[in-house]
Image: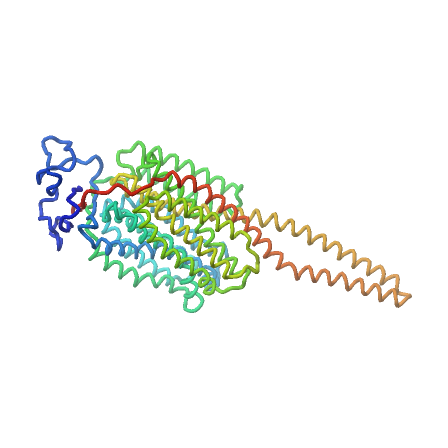
Length: 593
């Protein structure tokens, strides 16, 4: 249970004899002298008159953490959490770079190799809703350590995969700890950092959410092109080992809640819903959006999620408390997070394709071109956290989204000859907008929730980030497919017209050749006509590749325009966020352990 002290009090940590603790064992329920109250005065009104020294909480006991003023080293455990978050998110983007190389090594088809990414997304979508319960049941710190160990083990298995089927199986196992890490890490952050410093902390923490996928193409491109693609998995092992050692010594202890029951019906409903929707969205471009499998999965997913809401409103101990959506600031932040995630991951997917296929750049060179945007994010995000602490989420979010919308629109004039410097500049400015907006939006939403609902909010945040990225990419792929089909049909009509002209020319040449069998001059004329028809056909084939690139780039530009419009819609929503400094806490919070 949380208690408070004066901001200038001595460092306050655990009450279980932890080194450096200034709270003797057995005094976890006592409050320090504050505002003239006696030492043993309760912080909140007691619910049981016979036990005023231990007021009963309105919700399951929640662990909280020390205030930054009393415990200036909250930055150390925060950095430990950043390591785990960075590793789990980086793995998603870095694997995409190696997909084609894996396909060649395993001799897999395109449909088979796509399941390396799809299987991970499906498994992660199933485990994330249960992550909050797992963290509460085992204790957040212990859950984080176990998840890091599991991620390291299954990453090594992925690096040892001998065929595409084993790789898919190991990726499913890797996704289980990979889905748990973000939820428990974000929950711990809100328990060890006070509200007055939460913006700065989230700015640092956000490096794992936004900077990791931005740096992924550069790092992954180098490993794939110059070393070995298997290293993208093996490199997780030493990083995770160091992260586990640091977590053991740096993270505070969090009390588990072993009595909390598991909401099996709720888990089954959201697992089926998330699995069905993600599978439908992943495979719809191949199956067709109006095919029976796609429609059945979409219907099953929507109905399962509706059932999940009904179940969670009825059970005493819900898996995820859907009542958090009653808080508009939190719901609004999820909408804005989805908008930013769609724009971020959609562009991160298609721009490398454009550079590699239509500007003939290698994987590492593509990564180098995209590196400046990652560096800009690394600089902007901590600064955005400081801005949040001073001005609140409204203005950094609105300005950042406006910058993203404008630069995305400006980028919608790509050609096969777009200068690399121009593209780098646009992407860097766009990255600055994402870095400015993302963390204030997320922080403002979670800070609007009561402390006991932070874990639930963290789980919903992770679900929205992952599913919106998948949904956005699927929608973008569908839009690209439609646009390319239309453009291809238009171009094919033009090419067919050219072919008809060439055919007529060839027929005229043949007639002239027949008529000139008795006259050499006529034969010569006919031969020239036939040659003209062949030249036209040759020119048509020579233009085919160029036309294909134009079809793709036209579809990509239309996609960027749609993304810009979607992002612009988020600006007025951002203007409804809170403005001004967050409510300051009177003093440090104490962890029960």
